[in-house]
Image 1 (tube, rainbow, N blue to C red):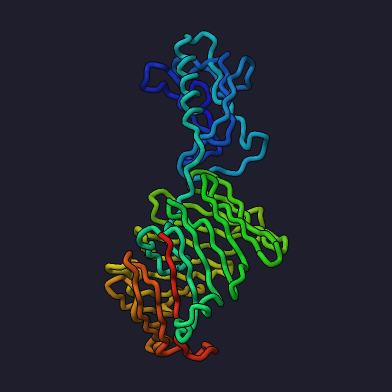
Image 2: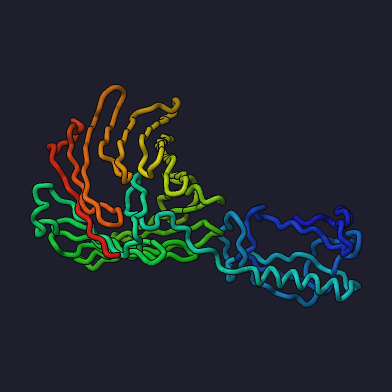
Length: 385
């Protein structure tokens, strides 16, 4: 809104300039994407007499602003992606100095308008795993992970049945993931991080089909993403990182309009590399909350799962980890009430950087609902530093 003439008290400064409020903008929002016009033919006089906002009837200076503040900016139609805001008309009788102040303000706004910050990737040197968020030591450039039966660990040829290879850039961003089956490349995912978010290109190497995610910045640390599937359908999501760098919000939609309520929403909370809580909302109104409790290590010592289906939150499951001196769990229990649903033990082999190269999982007690028999699985990792 712009205060009507005569209604705005003179500023404390000697310049006699108006205080400007911009309609339909967040207090912590931004001007970027808005076209700002200063009309120098009519400058408001001292004391605030005369209209505060009028149609332009003289020469204009057009400025395409690209400045981001905190928060986000609404999607705006139009050629410039923004609205045209006529701020003030300035009285003819004002001095050149006062006009120069306005021009200087315009220049400062324009020059401050730089592209948004790079996507704040919170998973640097972290392999995909929602709980185990430990960054890999030694900043490896490449990691190959093989999942095999323990009995087959002595036969390297059998490692190549199912495995994945991850590549990282110098900043710790995962830039490529390749999946293999029986030694043949099945799918690849390429990641690019920039001021517009994360761009992902996924390729089905066998069918030569492509899919991926295209992201665009909505404001500082807020990103709109469109995911296109191989069948031609597309869905959208909004990722945002509130100021402070301790949490992340993802809202998923069933189409690309991103209108209405999301069908799924996740709010993740962090303390450094440690995830402390994850709150998940479904469109059915069910709220699931995972609470992670840490002492020394990034891997949580215990986990609580709470579910609220509308009648209040109830504790439905607990998990307990006993971690070794490297911070890896050597015992893992999954509990429901007084019952132990699962109990697994792990042993490891480490390299000189403290990353494990072999993990063997022994399922001492397995969930009775699991249709697969108890077996000892091993995961082998190879690192390129």
